[in-house]
Image (cartoon, rainbow, N blue to C red; front, side, top):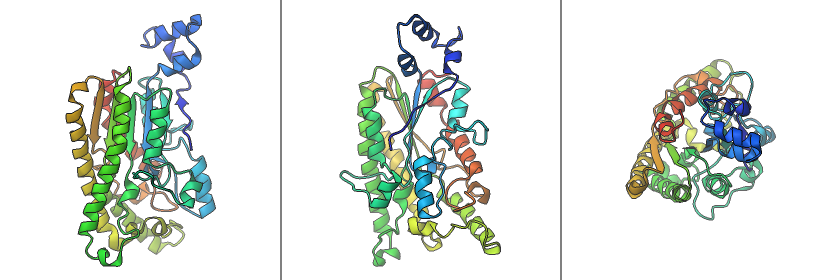
Amino acid sequence: MKSAPFVSPNFLERVAEPDSPFHPDYLAYRRGAITRAELISRLPHVAMIGDSVCMDIYISSPWSTLWRARTSRGKNWFLHLGAAPRITSISKRLETITPFVAIECAGVGALVDYEDCRQNLFRRMLGTRNFSGQVGELVRARRFPDLILISIGHNNVDWAWQCPSHELDTPEQRLERLSKELRQNYARELRRLADCARIQQHRVAIIVYGLINFESYFKGRAAAERLRESDTTLYPHLETTYKHLVSFHPRYRGNLIRLAAMANEKLRAMVEEFNREFADQSQRIQLRYSNALATADLSHAELLHPVDGWHASVAGHNVLAQAAFNDLRASLDFLEIR
């Protein structure tokens, strides 16, 4: 599904203020020299590429899940449109600094995919767009973002899915192969973004967030499982998780944690390699790897959704928002957003 940009609701009042850096643009708008759309295009644009870790979603019955996947937007740690400040999202924090345009591209079940990867029927019904599809939307957009946040790959570490039985007990080669494939596919799409950023007339900052801290996450998941054992009304779709992510099963979690750590190290090295390649363009493009999500403490059951004990609760979204925003300073400084 194509993303609908969100514009700060009070942007006109704010750019009308004499001390606003966009005040000259506002005066041009008032004179009729530029249109409202052109005025909006001059605001900072911030995009989020990701999977369900970046969305307000939980798993229940197939049809209910399908409905939420296609309608649940703007209620997560990146973008929260609700009037009540239940989630102090990145967008709410950024709005205290500047009016801006938010573009939420994340999709349920999104994968870091390879070329010509075909999605199954259920993913198509969910409206899932993989990494390549989300990148494609941004590179084709009339206005390329100033800041791009990427948090994707969590579905790629489901190592036990379609795993041959003989590799379940000796998965070392499989884990290494999967982590290499993730880096290769990630690097190809990141290059598409970087190549598009190179031809822009404005500065572009891209942040690659490492995968979440699965070791602490599974501590929270285990706590939720213990609560369900004592009260079966809690987390009614806890077991439904295993139908979608086989590796979440307790006996496979240890190797999922290992694979996520391997993937994060490869993502970090990938970003370093890109930065060496683009060293002569460091004044126009900033590319950073962030371990903010990979080190966030997710070890408490209350951070998981009360229905599936898998996705983030409101409290979980606040933890992720805090962690992700805390590592934005260098990118905002680069973009001169203060």
